[in-house]
Image 1 (tube, helix red, strand yellow):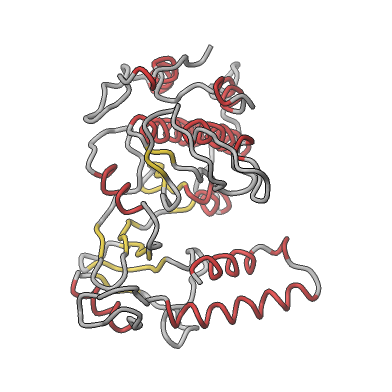
Image 2 (cartoon, rainbow, N blue to C red):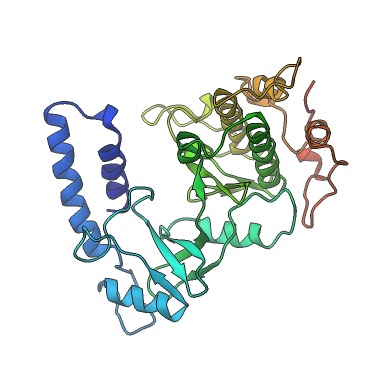
Length: 335
């Protein structure tokens, strides 16, 4: 049900998928799945900690009360009589919330099989200026498992509304993207779904969100064989959903997606220095090499030195728990 609701909602808002009778059928699918999803949105396969037994539903009021005890007021959608209809700017598994001090937040329902909470808690514990992981306000686990995150501006919305524009801002975002993915990889996290919808901006700083399908790995030589990601943003070695299973490095698959993101930023406006080339052009081309082994690791000294020159600061110092000294993690950088 979790996956069906996401699929129906995505198709509902992607008009390129719809034509003729298909639009009517998708509308019926969305309505039916929405109704059922709202009924089971708060179901839990075990004891909820408040008297509910395995298989029973945890209803909207219980969730609202649980968050109220934590100092959060959940915002509802007036179109939904139960208060759990999807909001336009959020995925179906998310809700807006207001903390008692007025801070705006996002509440996200986590899939039971997701590693997201553990990954966020781990990354949140590492203090580094290169950490561009969305901060974790907290979590709630006495009904379903929720993460509580700060509300931020999606990239697509920022560019469409011209909140983000100009060469300096785009270069700034491009550099932070490379920093953020390098940070993940240094600490053994492969995101596996790098795309504009999973990048947000808060107070001028770029953050990476949605670690629902992310994995923890031992380095760039670690391999997985599952098809995952978003079509159009996945590395070619990942293959196709209905094709044969392939083994690939999730770290190096992220590098390809990073290259596409740098190209995306470049498409939003000029990132060229006066009388010079795009400072990320060479890195973009190398990250989009079809041979995964030839893509430069973003935490390599060469890439980091290039970022330092671009930022005008000295080369970064290793973070706590930095694992770059592992010989398997060393690689050549930009040629």
